[in-house]
Amino acid sequence: MRKLAVRQPAPRPRTAAARRATYLQLGVPAAVLGTLTGPLAVVPAAADTASVAPIERAHAGARAVPLQTTPATYVVQPGDTVSSIANAFGLRTVDVLTWNGLSWRSVIYPGQTLALTGTAAPAAAPAAAAPAPVATASHVVVAGDTVFGIAQKYGLTVDAVLAANGLTRASVIYPGQSIALNGTAAPPAAAAAPAATAVTPAPAATGAQTHTVIAGDTLFAIAQRYGTSTASLLALNGLGAGAIIYPGQSIAVAAAPAPAPAPAAAPTTPAQSFAALDAEQAGNAALIIGIGRQLGVSDRAIAIALATAMVESSMRNLAWGDRDSLGLFQQRPSTGWGLPEQILDADRSTRVFFGGAADPNGPSTRGLLDIPGWESMRFTDAAQAVQISAYPERYGLWETQAFQWLALYG
Image 1 (cartoon, rainbow, N blue to C red):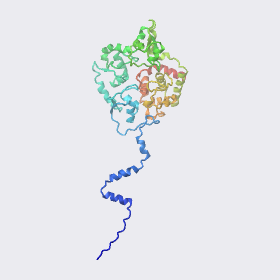
Image 2 (cartoon, one colour):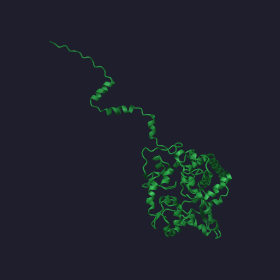
Image 3 (tube, rainbow, N blue to C red):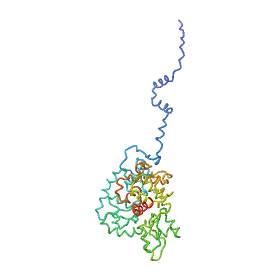
Image 4 (cartoon, one colour):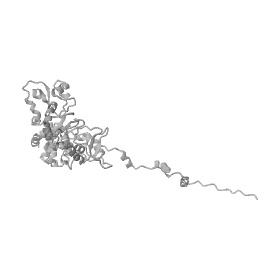
C-alpha cells in the first residue's frame, strides 16, 4: 500500500529571545554575550569625571581626597614635587614642607624619604638628636638646607646652632659646609667660621663700596649697575657660582678708600634705611592695615603682615619673583596659593596671608590665624610659620619698623 507523503508545516521564524536561548543551550558562555551587549550600554556622564586629574587650584577650598590611608612616609620618585606629593595624598603643601623641615626653595630628589604626617617628624627627632651629646656631632649641609631646618631636624633651637658655629642671623650656609650640633663642638666651628663668613660680604669691612640688596636684585643686574662683572662680584664677596643673595644683604661692588668701613654695619639693621615708605609702599601698607582692621586681627598680626610684605617684595605688588612667586607676599601658584591673577590681587593675597575662617583659599593654604599658638611665638617665627622661607630670621629685623608703619598709616 502506497504511503502518502505528509507535508510538514514550514518552521516559523524564531524570536530573538528564542535564538538567544538556543545559543546558550549550545554551550556559549554567557560572558561572551556580555561582551556583545557591553558596547551598547550607556556610560553615565559622571563616570567620565573620574578620569580627570584634579588641578591644584580648581576653586577655593578644593583639595584632592586620597583614595587610601595616607602612609607615614613617602619615597620621592623621578618627576615628583612637594606640591604633587601633597596633592596626591590630599595634604597641604605647607604641611609637608613643615613636617620635613623644608622651605619653598628646598629641592627634593629621587630616593629621598618624606614624612607625610605630623606625628612622623617628631618621632624621628629623638633618633636624630641622639648624636647631640657627642662632642664631634656635626651635620654636612646639602642643597636646600637652612639653619632653621637643621635645628628642627636635630631637636635644637636656631640660636643654639648659630652659637655653636660662630654664626649670626645674617650668615649664609652652603652645601658641603660642616655645621656643629652642640656647644662643645664650638672649637671645630671656629675653624669653619672663615668659610661661613667668606660667603657673607666680608670685604665690606676692608672699605669696599657696597650695595644693599632689595627684592628682585640679581648679581648680574648689580654688576651691570656698577659697571663691573658678575665674576668680579663673586670674587670680591667670596661667593660661589650657586650663591643666593637676599633683601637686606650688603654686597661689595668695588674697592674703596679705607674710611668706608662704617656703612658695613648696615646689614645688621637693614630696617633703619626705611624710616618712611614711598607712595606705592605706603598704599600697600594702608591696604594691609585696612584688611587687618576689617578682619578684626590684633595689631601684632598686622605688624607681622607688614614685615612679611617688606621682606618678600619690599611691600610692592610684584608680577615676578623667585621661581613662580608673585605679589606682595610672593605666594606661589604651583604650591596652592591661587591662580596668578588671584595672587596679584593685593586685597585677596593679604586675606590669604591672614587666613582664618575668612580665607579665600579655604583649607588649601595655611595663614597666620591658622597657626596654633602663633600669638605666643617670636615675631619672626610667626611669619616664618606661614612663609616657610629659606631665611626665617629676616622678618624679625623689621618688627620695630612694622609697628611704626602701623601707627603712621593705620
